[in-house]
Image 1 (cartoon, rainbow, N blue to C red):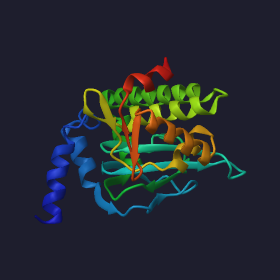
Image 2 (image 1 turned 90 degrees about the vertical axis):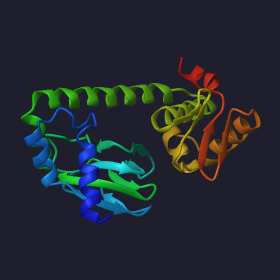
Image 3 (image 1 turned 90 degrees about the horizontal axis):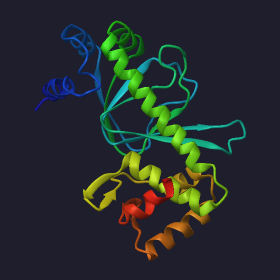
Amino acid sequence: MTTIQKRMINLYELRYKPIFSEFTDPEFNHLCKNMYLRKYKKGQVLFDEGDIREKIYYLVSGLVRLEKYDESAFYTYTDYVKKETIFPYGGMFSDEAYHYSAIAVTDIELYYMPTTIFENSIADNPKQMIYFYHKLSKILESHERRVQYMVVSNATNRIIKTLNYLMKELGDYTNPTMVNIPYPITINEVANISGCSRETVGNTIKKLKEMDKLAYEHKLFLFKDLVYFNSYTE
């Protein structure tokens, strides 16, 4: 199968994804003419904080990490984009530059399109605008919940709440009682999100493994006691 044939099949599949479903056929066809399929290797940077916000991305497969450092370069904001997601939402319709950097955590495949064309297509379609409003509301709700989870003094609680957050955002059910994250997440990343040291995170994960609450091998998490982790968010 040629690259062009694969691109056409993928574009046809995109038409029925919720994020594109409210576009009219002429609007979607216009987007398709300006969408480009690309592959990036693990570790490649898609854009850096401060770069001109000239592209919007749709992730087909893999995982992307978003990160931003404060002026001291000590505090890191970390978030993730999983497959079948548009990004970045931050700055849409307003800012000229990206708010954070985007790095491929795994090998990825994605589409990108010019920001102006994508934003104009949304602005001209009230139903699509409502969809994006609801999507932004969900993102805000998720971030508010994350802040609430992290505003606790106990380091162990913060780490478990962080693991629960990652489980909910990135996990897939392997069966009704277990969830795995199919992407590599390092101890350093958990430390950055929870605001704890790498040593503390490592010790906490070791204890959770001994308690048979989760498994962690080759940077992959398997959550074996969902009731336990969910109890930390109640």
